[in-house]
Length: 352
Length: 246
Image (cartoon, rainbow over all chains, first blue to last red; front, side, top):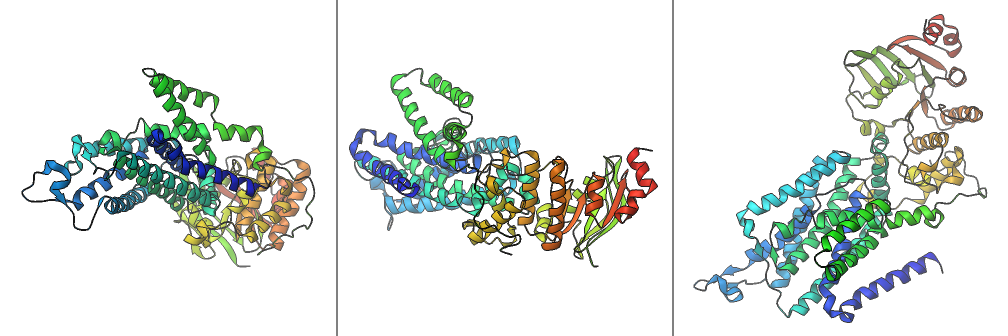
């Protein structure tokens, strides 16, 4: 079996499982939707932290923008009807052309635009910091974003805001969000796969390995770094928008969950293997399933168990699962030495 | 011969230490010029000033007639002035071939090339250059697994991949097995003759610089001590004194 057929079979298997899962296990739709969200988290974090070597603890910023923007758009699209009390919900508000779905789509579009603009603006400044300084700065950015959100009346300040209710049965809502996250994760995976195979992928790897050398070789490092962060922001904003609407309620704890999602996205990428395409997918899956099991079977001790899991990951799998596999069998990852001579020696200066 | 690089009256001080004091030198296009001097004489500082690592306090540096003393490192690199590092810098987690592929100059980078795959012609050129430095068989290994000497050769090949007009080499033979040194000298000469790359070389090893360079500058205590053809420099009493610490 060639590599290509094996890959196609693997993708088909995962794709089919993803498509059929909500019908096979309808009770777990939300958990499975969140699994795809975790995969999105790990993939987008790894783009910056793994492939480019810029460990960000502030990626929840883009997630939060994604949470809030569609909810605000939905609120602004519907206006109150005179004489009707606001509290009665649907009856009190009316919108000429918009319904839940196209309002949501408009909101997601706006979320993406804002998040990418913020990533580009912020990135051109703080991506100039290296190593721990960048990590600490992004941590601050994440915290600051939460503080701003909890003090800004327009987006509900401390009391948060409510996204519109899904028009339909809750099980349909679960199905809708499951497929939304599934499609997003699949698009994200293949986008990154394509990016890593291009000059962009080589450039961000070079930045990770030795940024000074990359600069000395004339690589446009700032440009590549900003683009990488913008791609992360793009997918995180979409994930945030979907999560905000799935959750219905949004406040700073939901939108900027630095100590849960913000830390988990780092852990999942490390567990699976930083700087690999499949690592974050594997890491997110194992982490999410384990976590759900802890909540089910170790209730009361779930946080302790999670803490132990984190310690085990960092101590025993510093390279992650994919990194460990690569150390054991480097030749399976293409690290081979040619023993036979070249059939046709290339002369110096060819291709000039 | 027209100069490709002209350094005029460059002074650079770090606090109270004057690392380069009013240095002037010329590198003619197509030549191999050597730069020697005892440890701490300011050779690497001069290289750093030329490629834009730090601003110079005084003086001017022109590359192909263009003032570059105010440009930053990547901008100078994109003009075709490249350097290798004394402490050898390669991308350790990437394969040797990938190290080569990313070294194609970024000047051609439109949005399209940023996101396109590496063209086969580039890979072919990379393989050719890897063969030239004797690393073809190891092209799929991670560069971090190479020995120090092999990394030096890889770094040289990466610089050539960039097709520079002028290449500054910081001690290219340091750490390289003495048997390989002769073949390296031979290769450097071929790079100069066949590819038309001007070389400006820092070298401690007098034997190497005598074989390689057409013209040698000698620094000591941040000042230019002497310059001339290698055999003249070799017998210059001031140079001998500087090296022996007299």
